[in-house]
Length: 313
Ligand SMILES: NC(=O)c1ccc[n+]([C@@H]2O[C@H](COP(=O)([O-])OP(=O)(O)OC[C@H]3O[C@@H](n4cnc5c(N)ncnc54)[C@H](OP(=O)(O)O)[C@@H]3O)[C@@H](O)[C@H]2O)c1
Image (cartoon, rainbow, N blue to C red; front, side, top):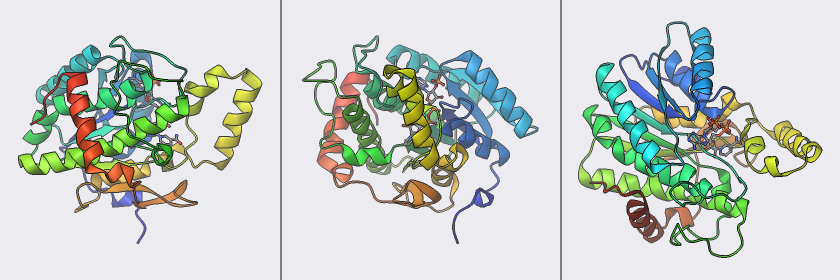
């Protein structure tokens, strides 16, 4: 039987964090699905205004939803540390440990930019920030006795020809926004599979999963590369993508299935089932051979620990 949102079990008593829950995006609909099942959802985003708007809309759509808001800017290592502290404080103050972390937030094909830590903006937001956040939240996650971490990747990971293993504060060669995006989404999968191996080895009661939304009509493109295009071209290219895409609500299904499907094999990667994984009901899908390369995963892990200053167990 295909998975539907009615397969989401009762999540009453569970605490979940969703990063990037902006109204209209995949994170918003992920948060909505979890809140509707009874979870207390901590909305973690970089703009208070957008967090307030998302919380207000969620409260209207899910009467009685239990929501918290936490400021989190994934592009700054210091801000990630502050955000993780706020999340840990929210879970413990608000009663109980953390059961679920959905690393959803991301940027796509942004113009070249370096962060306050001198990292590439896409790699910082899509990989290094979530790597640090996850490591800092392992303790509250382990406290739950059975936790899941879901990281949102993309079909675009298949376009990456190599893992992003260069020293991250050094820019080598010409900047290609799409190449860096593909590499950051490959990093999401290398991270997930290596994380699962390490969690298992450390005997922690946490499982790691990955998901991708297919093609969903969100503001991701407009927020990224289209900003560099002249307005008419940007709106035509966005309209073309949106015409082919599924709704953001459907784009959240893979993450929701990965987050909640009972008995799902740890390390599973979930994506849509139709139109070459662009749309449709979610199911387990295959990652590229490079995403499954344990050597690349180990090397990226070591680089990520050095870059973010965290040591996982
Ligand atoms: N839409 C698709 O077809 C598609 C396809 C493949 C993969 N994905 C993945 O799906 C995820 C969600 O994207 P979406 O399509 O829902 O796009 P979106 O609507 O643009 O949502 C992206 C979210 O990430 C947040 N974000 C960006 N930079 C951040 C930062 N530095 N710190 C904290 N949060 C930050 C955004 O916050 P602001 O609102 O403040 O900018 C927003 O909440 C991303 O990981 C993306 O790579 C999407």
